[in-house]
Length: 196
Image (cartoon, rainbow, N blue to C red):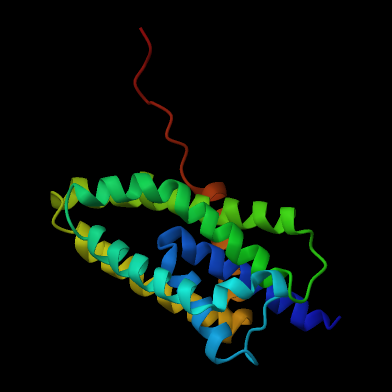
């Protein structure tokens, strides 16, 4: 096994599953289309052949369109986020397991759990932190714009994960360093009000 290929496969798996945390269907559709039309770029194991079937591509295209529009409509986007709380982590698990099983010897259960955690973490950050902040500061007007930007990021990260996974790895490592630095250096917000 080529070490660089294994590392690239893991980085791609992390990138695809994090993308699924923003939009479950964009990275799944990207993987389906790439494996269907460019199998030399991404060849999945036999157990994942269903991802490149015309039925899967058609269903994912319809679900992608529904997700795109549902996430732009006020009130409907909250219902959609509730449904996606289950779908996005599952998509992340599928993407991580399908992509990492090609080159690495990672156990599929471990790969699925990692994908589930990555996609679930991104989804929670998006729906519990980012979206409420945008809704509160813009009165809900900014939510469709942020949703569109999330879709663009999901598409960009999905394509980059498949074409140049090493860049995703550099980004993930850089983000982890920045987050650790931010946690360690943020001011301690203890109350300065004296107790009586």
